Length: 206
Image (tube, rainbow, N blue to C red; front, side):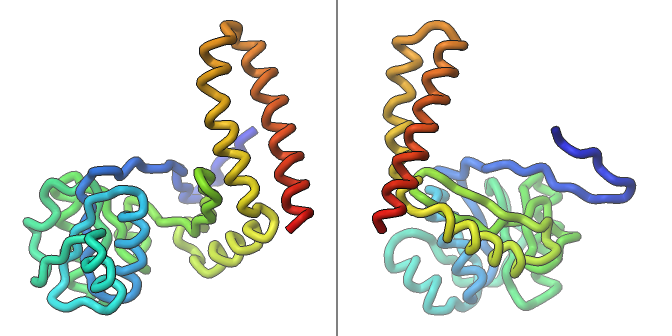
C-alpha cells in the first residue's frame, strides 16, 4: 500500500515517456548535454541539439546520424514543436530562458541542477534488454541515485533481460488462447516464477 504524503513533502509521479519519433530539444554542447542527447536518441527521439559549439560527445552523435545540431545560440523559437526540452549549459540566463520558453509553449522541461526549473527529473537507469529500472531521488542527490542503480545492477544481470524477452514472446499467445482473466493470471504468474528461477541459474553459471 502506498504511504501517505507528509505535510509539505514534494513527491514526483513516476512515469516512463514514449519519445519515439518526437522532437526533443537539448540545449548545450558539453558532456552533460551529450549524455542527455544520447539517452533520448537511444529511445528513438528526434534529437535536436542547439549550441554555438559542441564537444566530442555530441560530434560523435552527429556523425552517426543520431542527432541534429544547430550551431547557434538558443532562442525561444527553438522549443516550438518539441515534446520536451533539456537545458544543460553552464549559463544561468540561457537555462532560465529555456525554462521560460518551454513553459510558454507547453513543453516539458528539465534544467540540469535546477530542480525548481524542472517538470521532470531524469532518473539513474539500469537497462537489461527490455527491462528499465529507474532510481530517482527527486533531484535531491543524483549521485545517490547512481550508486543505488549500480548496487541493483550487481543483483539484476543480463539474464533477466533474456527472461523478459521470452515472456514478451509468450504473452500474445496466452492472451489469444486463454479467455479467462483468472487463468491468464495463473499462467503468467507461473511463467514469471519459472523465468526468474531460470535467470538465477544462468546467473550462477556466470
